[in-house]
Amino acid sequence: MKQYFLIFSLLISSLFISCDKSPTSLPEHFLYQNSFETEEDLNDFDIGFAEVRRSEEAPNQGGSHSLFVSGGCIVPHLSAELGPFTRDHTIAFSTWARMFNEGSLGGSGLSFSIGSSSEDRRSITVVSDEWEYYESEPLFVPAGDLIHVNFLCGGIAEGTTLFDMIALVSI
Image (cartoon, rainbow, N blue to C red; front, top):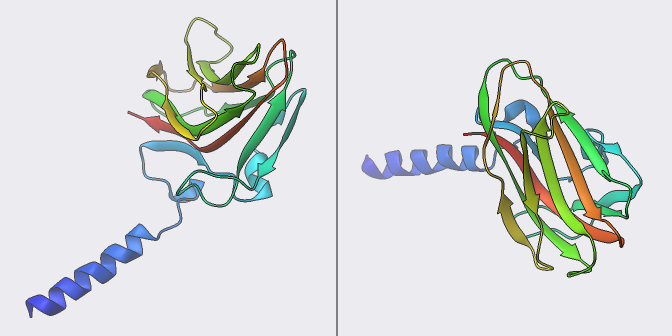
């Protein structure tokens, strides 16, 4: 009897492990998640003065694609507006990323803020040409407010960065 229970438990567990985490089926603490596996995954973003596309390079467990962003001195290169959310949240962003042109004159990363405020802003700076995991400091967002997300991949000189498995989580 224990043997059947164990097999049944493993079977049920495997169903949950293989579930697709589309935006409609995200766990409650995930407010937004994107791994850029389809062209439609780019629809959440407004493209600035940059080349933006899906890349066929991704980190381990990152699927088959990532977000390619390449830009120069006019920023932001890519932006999105998330929310408003129905309740207060303390949030953090996370992403896997790698940059090209390491050490170039410019920056690479993403920042997010409440509305258009520059006072309440958090940033992730990408510093490696290898895939690395990055996580922001937390930010409190009151119910009803929007979160503005900006991707920056260059500055004085053009820069290119790949992003994957970006997530906005309530912590």
